[in-house]
Structure formats: C-alpha cells, structure tokens
Length: 371
Ligand SMILES: Nc1ncnc2c1ncn2[C@@H]1O[C@H](COP(=O)(O)OP(=O)(O)OP(=O)(O)O)[C@@H](O)[C@H]1O
Ligand SMILES: [Mg+2]
Image (cartoon, rainbow, N blue to C red; front, side, top):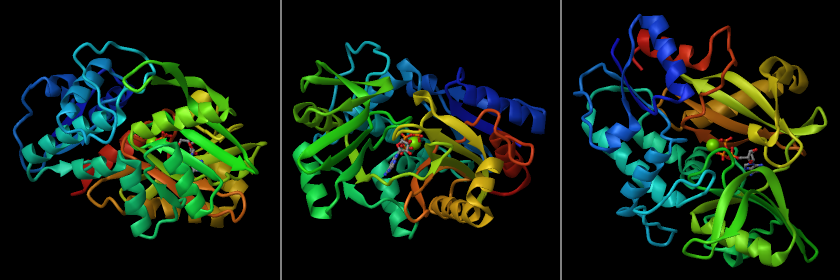
C-alpha cells in the first residue's frame, strides 16, 4: 500500500503518522518536506492507488516565509500584503494571513494538478475551503449544518459595527479567515454605550499600517474604544470572518467546546476543552475532558446529536477521509453549533477511540478500503 506524505518532517504529526503506517504496513511512507517541495524538489510520479496525505505546513519559519513569498503574486490587494525579502523570524507575529493562504492554495493547486487518480486522504480543494473560515462557514450553512450566524468579512471596525447594527447583534467573534489556535481572534461585546473586547492578540507599533499583531499566551482585555478600533482594524486587514458570539454551555465551573475527529463518516475521537474565558484553546490554560465524561454529562441523546452535527459538517467534504470538527453547545437551548472543520485537526496525542488513535484509524481505513 504505497503512501506519499508532504509535511514538516520534524513535526509530531509526521512522527506519529509514520509510526501508524509502519505498524500497519511494515514500511515507511514515502515523503517530502514542505520546504523542499516549495524550493522545487520533484514530487514522486503519480500512480493509480497511491495514497497521498498533505499535512500542515505550520510551525516552521522557512516554510512560512516561502508560502508568504509565493502568495505575494496571488494576493488580493484589498488585504495586507508584505514583501518577504528582508523579513526576519518574529515568533508569534501574525504576518500577512491572506497572503500566506494564497501561497498555500497555489501549492495545493500544484499538487492537485500533479497527482491524477490517486487516493487523497484529504482532497486539496477541500483543504483550501477548510483553511478559509468564511468559505467553510458558507459551505456548512448551505448544507444546513447548524452554525453561528455570520456577519461576513468586515473591512474595518466601522464596517463591523454597521454589520452588528444591521443584524441587531451586540456580541461577535472576529476570527482570521486563515488562522488556527485562535490566532488573532477577538471576542467583542457592547451594551448601553460601553464596549469591551477580549483578544488572543497584542498590538505593538510597526508594520505598513502602524500596528503589528502578535499572538500572546494570555488573553488581553481591551476597554478603551480607541484601542478596540485599532485592534479590530488591524485584524480585519488580515481578512477576517465575523460571526455571532454564541454563549457556551458550562460544565465543571467552566465553559466548553468540543473537538470531534470524524474519520470515514463517523465521529470517533472526542475531546472537550474547558476554559474560564471565551477561548478554549489549550495554550490559554483550558482543561480537557474525555468523551466518556462528556457523554455522562450531556446524556446519550445530546451526545449523539452533537456527533451527528459533526458528521453532517464532514459530509460537506466528501473527497476527504477525515477532519477535526469544532462544536459548541449553546448555553440557552443546548443545541450543538459547528464552528469549523479543521483540515489538520487530527493531532490528538493520547486520545483513543476504541483503543486506537486518530492516525491508526486513518491508516487502517485507507489500507483496507477504496476511499
Ligand atoms: N462564534 C463563536 N462563539 C463562541 N465561541 C467561539 C466562536 N467562534 C470561535 N469560538 C471560540 O474561539 C476559539 C477559537 O476558535 P476556532 O476553533 O474557530 O479557531 P481556530 O483558531 O481555528 O482554533 P483551533 O486551532 O481550535 O481550530 C475556540 O475556543 C472557540 O470555542
Ligand atoms: Mg481551526
């Protein structure tokens, strides 16, 4: 069963996936590093039956810089663009998210053109949509998946406020269309002339528009209107998706959402993420809870309904074997809402479903069936 993987070989994803392939097939998967591919190394010849896995290019500065450089010729000029020639590594900085995504999409198109009649673990065109929160939301909404109501892609703070007025909403989430790990996310609320925003990003002076954004380990609360305007303007420049802030259900004195990995049409690995603030990502101190505990807390019917929403969301990507679906249960009606489908959302070390991790399920599925 021949595998070909494109990835950052130092990443835990590559290490774990290699282990799963080795265990099931007795052979190492063929692979190429993202940086070598972007620098022009050849892909293996396309052959029928080849199983192709495209993994995350993230968390690797030379790869990020190469994708930014590639994206410069494809960027839509409405959004922030940056010349990469003298760009130095600056950990945590949100550089030019839309430009990065354009470079990534270009690379995905190249892969799609090259590989014919192969078995994609995730189709490049699906990855393109999953890595664009606005496009992903639109696809899920069109298919009838329950999602938070969207307010579109605002140009700036004034445009966001106009959209909130038009929709009659006072609490919104603003998210980088092409972000992950809550990068550059803003949770904003207003009431009777007051406004406050919570954000994973910190501002500092610099860059072409006067404000640099860095992802920060702690959440910053902004109350001053001038700061909130500056923050929202800066986040919007990166191409960001606005949607209603849905209050999350409480549990164990915290609020939670759920990562559900759907593989071959079925919700399998489930992890609840419990936090004290609006962001449940683990780097902000969120705790995890197991599928068993969550099922006991919600009850079997609500747990099944939540998994069904995740499966419905994944069914919007029929050419892909798996995806990590984020779901929250709202505090009022206790209904599951799908936040997004993560193309690279299957890295859940130590989380098992029927005794097997995500990678083992994926490899077992492709090596025994035709999908
Ligand atoms: N509309 C919303 N209402 C309430 N909370 C939200 C909403 N959208 C996102 N969140 C929360 O914001 C955080 C980050 O959101 P999301 O998962 O969409 O982004 P991400 O950057 O892709 O992160 P991840 O790496 O977890 O996929 C999560 O804690 C999520 O629960
Ligand atoms: Mg995500």
